Image 1 (cartoon, rainbow over the protein chains, first blue to last red):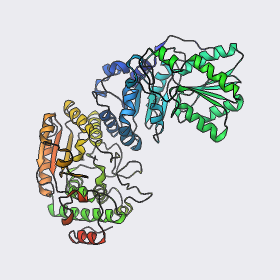
Image 2 (image 1 turned 90 degrees about the vertical axis):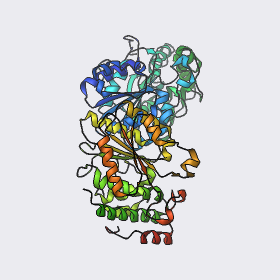
Image 3 (image 1 turned 45 degrees about the horizontal axis):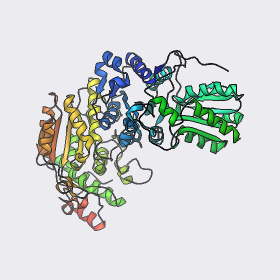
Length: 317
Length: 281
């Protein structure tokens, strides 16, 4: 089995900040907007180096989405930044009308997605954002797994024409993907090869899936592990090719099972190659206060949860 | 010098276009459209510096953003008669497969439209962003925006109003159509706006009134005054006092025609009051 090394745990949002720094130096059309969360989004270097290309909007996310749409009318490539909850649910109509329906080249970049805002509790967490964004026609939805991938994705967005939702987290997580990777929107990355089960994971759950694989191997179970960083458009071909071999699938995401990655995978499989599927996802619930590790355990979003779902789905084959 | 007679003929034809579009599909918003016919006509025919053709970025020309998208009939008529698309296309208003959706959209690729609007309260934010893009591009042109007075009840406007003055967006002239009417009745009755002037001034804007918002000469001189006031560190607000339904006697000054189409007899009467000037489509 291929092993993945943690080259030094970092937060994914710092990957976003590093990507913005590079874009600031390489793409003069990139502009950054923020709703009073510069520190959380790690964009201070971009601001220091490009003060005229940074727009501090204040605590006014609806206005931020509208201004971002307006900035595209003049050829700018706006990257908005705030927490995932305030990047999506709070401003759904602004994104729908002024960005998605208007076909504007806005990159909606959302930190602190999922449960991992931890102690702040449910008001600052969001488990519905993937669903909200993927339902918008024309919207690309990306959820990156570590620092390096988030940096690469951020840089790649500037060359992609059209609205994008980029989702990342707060906590420090293992950094294991290559530093020199190129990020290809909509292209799955196969991390492990096996025969018994396909694990399709996104975001922070990708590392947990790799950890689960180690334990499963000791039990004689081998898995295909697919890193689905792009939830829309979904690389259905890669998933179907894998399940034709393994005959079952576990999807893993830090999101409600309703509207998330698992549902997108289920649809593709139901159309072409139905197989047993189990979901590692939250069960239609809000979050709560707690440390990220406590929440991952309570809501079943970690290595152990993936192992259990793998054993269950194999028994259903 | 503005050719007032020519503009009057243009507006009369726009009024005909408005009532005919709405009548044909028995839906749409004639009241606010008629109220803003003079203003939008003067903008496109007299005030705005426009390039030939149309591109989305609009660099090197003045841009207009319509926030209260339900008055699409007047917007479409003025755009068509200003050369953005064939006048005959007004025949397709609100029909299946049309570029002239009930509310304006970029989705269908209609030249002249740079943002979708209809869900109220979003247009000013977009106009602010476009104005800031002009500054980044060192493009010394003006952004114009129009919103309804009832629309000011949407909170996003006040986010944008606060931001525009705080960030010195002074290449922006935002007009409020003060007709005092909205769907459920007068704005005073539904949710009193208080002093719109005092509110904008408190937020740091330069505020001008055009008391005769349906008088072409008054609009020309008022907007020239607004243009002269721009570029001095503050955004400019024009309070345009209009009469809803202006130019069609039975539609004037009432919210009853906010979103109602005329029947055959009412159309005939409206057309009688506005003789053909540039040719019907």
